[in-house]
Length: 175
Image (cartoon, rainbow, N blue to C red):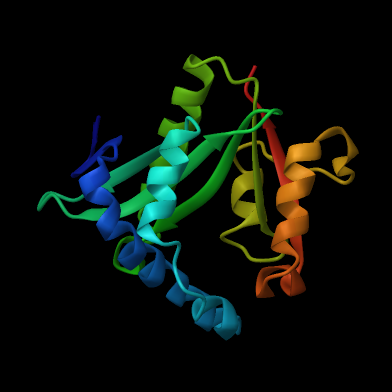
């Protein structure tokens, strides 16, 4: 799918090598809001994306007209629905609507593949996190009791610097 000057498609295994650079560049915006330790976190290792494919996950990428990967959205299935693991847009391409187009494409594909819900964990008070996803209809989940797999992911995340900044779980009904 071509969107403006960007092409959105499923990533190839060969393209995974470019994802850490995108994640690092996207993470730099956290310095602007005082989350320096978040910006300094290492990106996901390349082999994590191959592992994601083994469990039925998908990585959607956006490429510019020079065929460079400039954004991606990594997802995988949970018992409860589709989990959005990462949505990253290179800082040079931020605030141009690319993340929104990539997220919409991901959600459209999820819906067509029969997913009833999409989930994610994100920062509650960062404008380009929970408030951003709320514009797409995601809602904060106050109690994760009904979502044991998501609850397990949130518990694992509590061992990282992420949680000290107020993370929340969110859900979008796709039906």
